[in-house]
View (cartoon, rainbow, N blue to C red):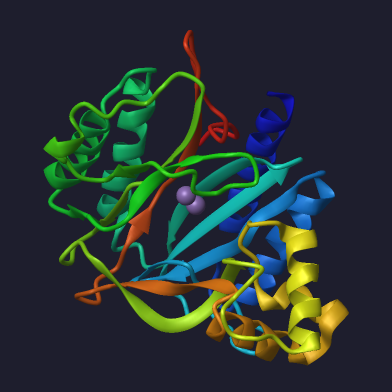
Length: 299
Ligand code: MN
Ligand code: MN
């Protein structure tokens, strides 16, 4: 419990710190490296690479070893951070609008998350959560993204198996949040079609298997064992490996991915190219109370 709450506090302040750095001229790498260093200074570890997804990219962008994004001003930026303390995870996100044109979109999606904060309780139906999110976003004239979801969280496990939709899904009427669940709720909204597809950039990976069907070179095997020792099954990025592995880290990671040892997370892009906003909190749902672990620092 102590570790979960500490992870939540660090994640909340890292999120706000990251958002404060989103300015014309700043780069994704500068901001993500600052946010990740901040998490470590506060006594946590990143539970996944800082996600810095811009405009129609909804999720899963983090700078690579060589690729980066510099803000020109006018973008809509999602900062999504994960922190773990001893494997106990907090996952939270916010959106910054540098254009000044999308305040009502941000309000709609922020409002959807706030509505869930008000109704979250043990035994709540996943249908009710999705319906609340969908209605709040639609009332403002936007669409929720229907193929992005919240998720339950386990120790050292960012996705523990249950997905919580951002739309009303009647099939989930009898699926409920059990007491003792840690769950991330993350509405995404857009003026576009409300769907994402995978893009071609992949800078986030996690362990898939230590025994891929295709044989590994000694160097690949050595890196895979390092990754498991350091990150277990949590997502990581080649950027984090360059101090020990140099510039070849990225090529080795890609080889491990191609051979099936790693899982890759491609960027997720809104299908109609429309801007996307996201807000996210992690909730600890107990039999007698609910704690939104990342709901501090006034947001
Ligand atoms: Mn997140
Ligand atoms: Mn999440």
